[in-house]
Image (cartoon, rainbow, N blue to C red; front, side, top):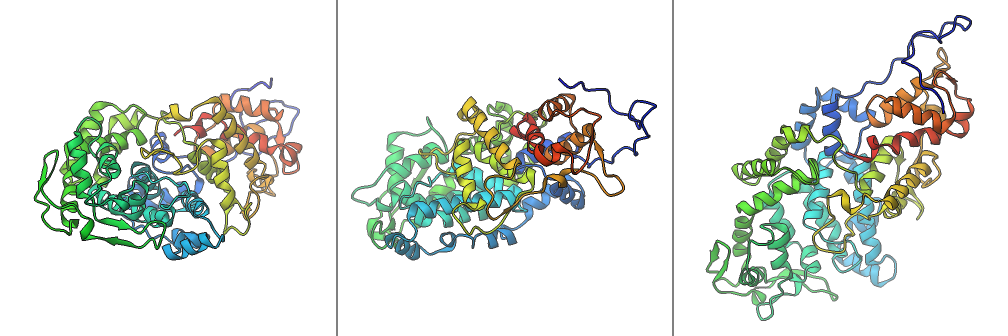
Length: 504
């Protein structure tokens, strides 16, 4: 095992060797508090992100700008054209499916890919994180069924509202044809109300289990009748008054005469009531605390966030600000494990891989989906309507860890995926110049730790780096050093396989 000495001085350690150059100026790193916040509200540290925060005047101002920014950033617009299905009409998607040009399963896969590349490159990191959270909360699975005809628009609509009011999110999600097709409300009629969406609206999307009765479910389903889709035929979306179940309804404390055959106003009042219910406030608060604080968030924090949610009429931004300012958040550093897709996205960001428009099935923007599956979970592919769990127990397993190591290794070597992706050349990772052509190995480790993870290297990291490469701490590294030419990928994986990268 290589021995790790004390922090190096300005000399190499012996009088017989020449004086070493002045100590290398290392990249700046954020404070521990800022790095913690970034690990939860972005898809991973990059030096460019650090410069962006510095230009904004600090994390608080950067975060505030993220909450206020509109959803239509340039990269989201441009990357949405990489796959024809993302912006295609329902009629066009159906025609292509029937012609065997692009199946519904492929359309769903392309939406998943678009979501992943947005997370890598979008400047609106907080919006992307919140979009993913709401897409799991209002889950519509990407399984290649009829909902695929509406899935990209559904995700786009949730993204637009991700930082607004929960009441608007709720109305958008529940009345959208993607949700209607997925949970059978598109075929629900006055004569035969389908209870799937009416039940999940209560159980999953708002008040939660134990707050409602079977009679509540029945009237919930009746309220939602009328929103139709001509499934497996024209796929035309409409509101059909003849299909709406009229007559008095009562769900929890909500009552309505529901006298009009056009029940959309009743639906809006019903969803507004549910959005502002104390049980919904608690459920939303717990969802946010679980995502951003810990797998088992403290009840006191959940209660305080629920009060903020109600006091601000379901607005999400004040709740996020309160969460960020809480002692519970500050105490939760490193308490969350990255999900499989988070791990893959963060790896692209850390390595600075430039993903471009896909031109082949093996292009990185396409292959990233298979990488997520390899690690353990495709985006939005959870088979049940409750959405992907946000607890580490669902994926913190030995097979998942080994799969992550494999993905890290392949990408650190720049081996796969390689098409339509630009990886950094091995020598480019070295902080050397013509005037300073060498760098001590321990200082290279420090430089890479700051660049890849946003934090200084610990003694343990240096020890592992020495073991992985066979280099000594004081060894001089040049662009032509054998470690750089043949084994730099082994050094890079030291950082990506560490808890600094695998947790958030």
